Image 1 (cartoon, rainbow, N blue to C red):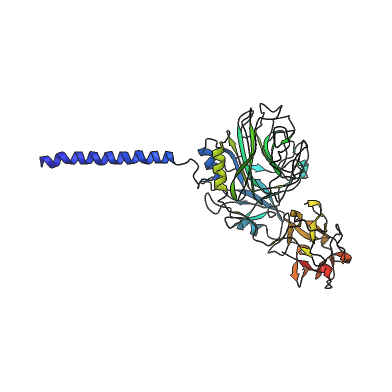
Image 2 (image 1 turned 45 degrees about the vertical axis):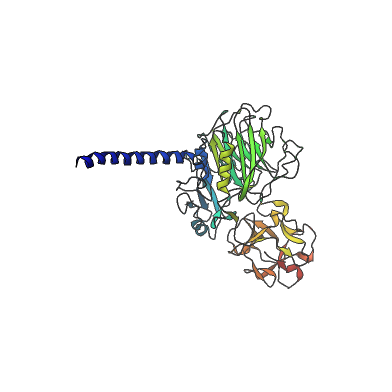
Length: 485
């Protein structure tokens, strides 16, 4: 008995020692695990890298694994009521089905994009600024909520389709100011851009006016060549630092950066506030990041003078002539490391961004396979001319055949002007509104409007560029034959 009683405490001590060693080894293993695990969402990865998100926005998914709040708000035109759009599950993807039902038969506008960070710096429609928007009292307007359908991990989703006059902004919030370092990323697309000022995402001025060089730090996406001497046609990831959109510290892009052409683009900018800014891009569905510039700030921009404002789709002084697409993005406190950004990109390409499952492509003429139905001059303005034009492959010729019977480009509809069903009525582009004058059915090669029983027609079989399409009694002519996606 004496011997057994002396062995038992020793055995218990050894067991306790073994358990302690196991805990130590487990802790060491956890420290050895990369801070940005493959399963991390962007703002988790940024936090692990020591540069936490201070603002995070998306209309398609959560940017934190723990986030289970709302993503954005839509308002419908028919009765002015609003609906918040949330997630299917915490840390998951958008639940878009309620939006589709809510907006059926009317138009909807995105009126607010919720900040997923603890700062709750939600983005409302901008109240305007030095340059007046098209909304009430010079405010900007919100994006058409149904204009940018995509899928994400196989789920239905909608991005933010920014057209001239669209802008979102929030002031006097907790973001880096002065010369404090800041990082930014967003997911956009080469499908929609222009050379106007400014499709921005990042920091702007709280006054919504130009308060001088270095008072902005934002990603600008487009083909604006602010200083001349650019190579290629763009679009480029540029830095809007106020009074200039910079691809390098002198302005123009380099020959190695002629433009980015992917349906989903990850755009990156970071600025340490005193001596360096860096620009990168990636394909948001595959591969790594390409650094297009990393070096000194432009003359007159050191130190930075950032202000407590976040903007999307508009410039620092509310310049709002630009177009672009936005799916997600975040702003960080601190200058993110390359390793952190690489980890965010690695996680991003697993998300599963894809085009909408609705058929999309050019509508070609039965008179000539080289002539396409074209949205004139890439304009998204209501009433813009729909015409015949040489097939170019441009985004203004990429029509989506929607399940609701509409034909859409830029999220707007092929429209019989004024719902006038008389022969010769002009065909234009118009905000989708569920009207019978925006309904089309493919029938024996023709595109018939069911309400009138009449056909989409190329007048007098004129295939000259710029010929505006009309509505006309169906007659079986080759000028009423169309090849639809």
